[in-house]
Image 1: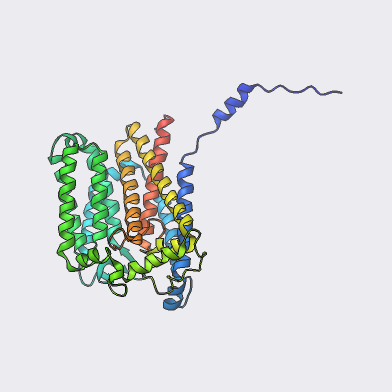
Image 2: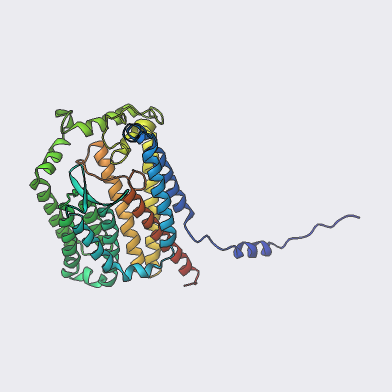
Length: 392
């Protein structure tokens, strides 16, 4: 018996496709974060293998610690992602106050932990908390809440931006006492960018920007060590074995890398020539081992990540979720500013600062806070999608 072909109604296929629920999160955003974190783990293992073996007699000591921090960060992120964005708005003031208390607490002799002359950590046994990372997160959450509640005032009145600037001044003074000039620049720059995106009048923003730049310049030249850094980076080859040592070694790494790099794990500069190779100067090791092509990949990944974050923020704004939008904008600005500063330091365009590559460089506090940040961004994206479907 001959079987008759069964006719399939095209409308049935369309309805079946329509029944498939959309993904709850931005898959491109998640994939980009995974690529950055994965590459970061690989390069931390490579950059720290020599110093780890020499100091700890374990070649992958720093890699294992970074992996533990990442696992803890993912676990913490799984908790944070369950928290509604409106909760962050409600606790924004408490977050800022808590961060300021921690910044003050770290200055006490028996509480603050000193590394390389800077008191930026609170020791907790085998772990240390870098308070400036918590302060960055808290300031962004506070600024997003302030811009949401006082949006009209900040667009029309001078007092609208004087209030947050006063609090930023207190945070900056506490950071400068550590001292941590790099974190101060990142926090102030991010806050200014958020106010600009919130619609501050151009003349007010220009006056504020000039005032802040003038203040930062005065702070930079007021301390001898800051002035020393400012002058040494302009011509590091003048004192290649003293003040310009770190930068010259970084530039040598870039020169050795060329287009294709010397190969993964084959860096010479990480062998006690380049200080902080697995933290502040990881970008230079990437340049040496993976070459200019590797640098382009890293830059492209961060560029795409920030674009996705800004798109998440714009979608939240269009849906009327203004606090979530400002929060996403703030996190995007934070990542791009810190990445740009770290890259500028590594190539000699900016003075040396203690700033890491977000999601890549070795650092427990940085990794944990970055994981929380990614979780909050995923929550914003989730709420955007639920709102678009009419489920919220």
